[in-house]
Length: 435
Image (cartoon, rainbow, N blue to C red; front, top):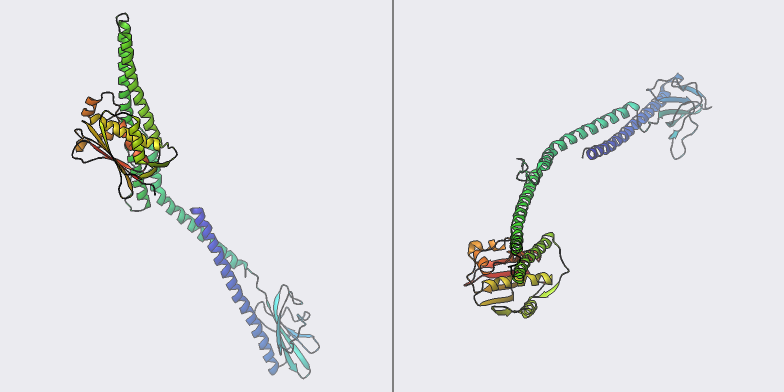
């Protein structure tokens, strides 16, 4: 920012210096030519009152010569009275008795001059009065150029210093936020950056950083809880299988090995189910996604119900033509998880409904069981969370089916909630339909 501000200031100063030099040069040039014209007219007027001979006084820098009818210099300023005629041009018919030209240089002078000529008619013939004013250089004078450049450089320096101080003062809170962020680690994530008092962009940055840290802390807490729950749920079947095998080895001759093998196999099945669900959740958390396609919900439900036998009566109310864009395999996993959960808690019947609701695809799974208390409707979507009724009905459950179903719903831009019903638990999935 300091370099940019200094560069802009330097460009502005350069433009201003150029304009000032051009303006001053024009005024000085005009002043000098007016001086030469005035002095030439003065000499012309002197011809009417007295003869003009010898030295003629003039302002500094103005040269004057008077030539008689024979082009002999008879009068002039000290530097020109003894020299050759400084010019040879004469006024033409179009210009009358005067004319002006720029000569580089006039005879006897150095550098370019603006020369004006007046013709004076005398009894002895036509006499010429020449007056020369020096051409002004582009920089006018070294002193003026030095002064303007010095002032410009001083202004650029002041602008750069002011910008540096302003930027440094403005970014000081940002540097403080950066320093505090470097001190925040995963093990010390409870800290927050200081929020400035001024209501400006820096304050909004600090608030955004703190909001991000809040989300990171929530994610870390969720990850720690998930890791702890996963470790516990994995440890239990492993410990059970180990205990069964150790007991069988102690009484190897008396043990029923086929029965032991079946028991261990059941434990391994539960372990495999937990690992499979954990991998599925990991893929969902990582955002892994398959190619999307158009899915007809009614057709999907019909096909999945036909593939497997259910222990409870399934009642369907399916509206045709309810389609959406999504991953078919994941939507099937979502539906089967809801159906398995409903079947475990239903007394005799599970209702499945598909309908369109103002451009939103809706899938409902309702059982006729005891239902879920209002304060526990979000608990069932927590990973490894299992209500007492669920554990009593299925001790081998992983507690990951409903969390997986909700993550799939979120991945499709939808929602999965437990809503009110007269009886049982009513799970409602809503996903925006294909546009």
